[in-house]
Length: 282
Image (cartoon, rainbow, N blue to C red; front, side, top):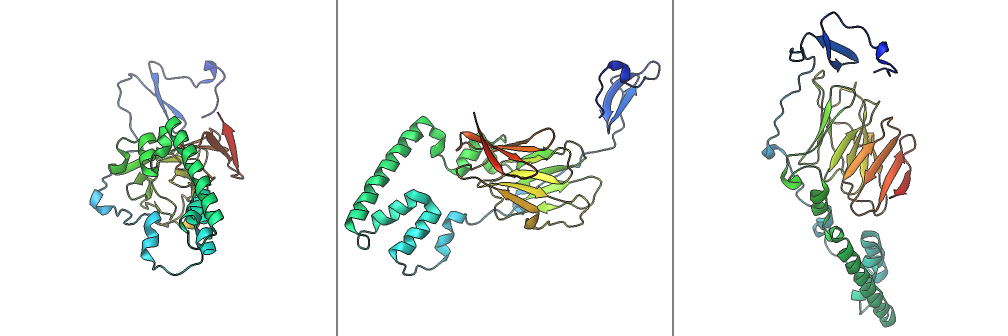
């Protein structure tokens, strides 16, 4: 809608009528505020049976159980522990490998690990929510009531067009447009435990999704006839220590994307044209 600097710039109304509302950049008028208005857009009535939603049968953290154990050297296991668990995982692997690691290295690792755990417990007493699991943390900070068992986990109307996005219990996202018979379904291997979805203003194709380990920005062509857009249409944005992502917001112009996580005291500001990360501390 064009900016109005003065009431004198508004178009004149027919005699005896009043302005009722704005629709598609047009001011609709009538003789009474109770007058029924003809709606060009009638929201569809949707039903999502819980039985039709296939949940993840195995979390990623337990996928190791599907593989057979095989002999590995201490240094190979240490590299894997560093990759999976960071410094704590590395120290724990060296500490528990008494027979393979030098005694001085095992003892030193055990002492450092004990100090790290003590500091972590002290930090947890100041911020109790950091001791929660990712799912419990999303449940605590999600805007949806009873998030773990809710079939609809997130919902977002597009600010400018007649369509909306719905995130479901199985972590799939469906996009509904009453003017199209096609309902795209968005799925991605990193799209787990969706906490929020948000359309980009002034853009018909960009949808931001807050996930457990990252932030996804889908680019779905509204003119596409595909019902299952490729995962290559999603841009993955992540930052160490900034997960799970529980809240996202676009700037009014769509040039900035803001995300927040209970595990991070910083909110990440991303510039839409480059999508680089910049922490803004409050």
